[in-house]
Length: 277
Image (cartoon, rainbow, N blue to C red; front, side, top):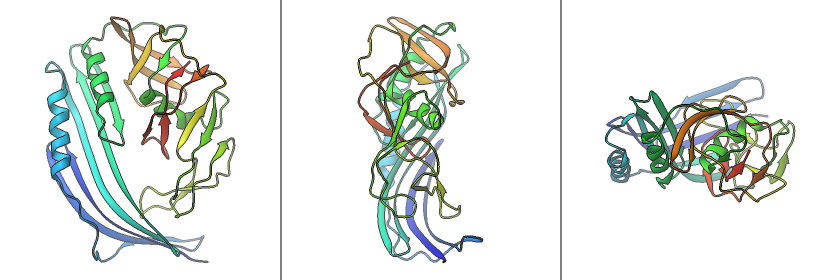
């Protein structure tokens, strides 16, 4: 049986000073053996104004400590309409990717957001400006929600912490996303990053469920990523009172987790929550 998927949408993308407004539509046909994708004529694709994206870009630039540099800034916002079989749905997306560099220290922080709450950027920028020399990892570390969210997709299939897929209205095929504990494949839902690629089964909207929720506020707190997550290994900036230092953490166990606070665009999506590791 052939599956027909169609998407049309409009995206405003700001990248390192350049603004691009794209409108496109495409379709994919999958018969289980052969996957074909092609662009189609755009008819009435939703249009998205660019002014707000430019305003956010300026706010981010003005917020960065003058002694530091924005190495990369990408902001994208848009609307899309989907059709898969006889299911229709629409969605709005926001993405911010930022890399800030402290040349004096030779450090770079990475921030990825799915909204325009810039508090994670302010926290990362302040920590980077105050960073000292690298230290050995402390006995216990708190992970800020943005750092914890980046880690969760890498913990699928491990026993580091209990993971759950959170319910949502639509997956990449328009099906309801099922609330369930994430243990082992096959996963019930589909992730489709583009009409040009065949969707894949994977856990969506991850959240952690630790056995405890009490977190000691006195231990150092990892507030920003210094590199992409590598398995269970985090290279992060930690704040310990007035001291800020880079360190590398191999997360073997999550001792406690707070309530999820924000959704982040890692993997098929993950919810950030304060964690004690």
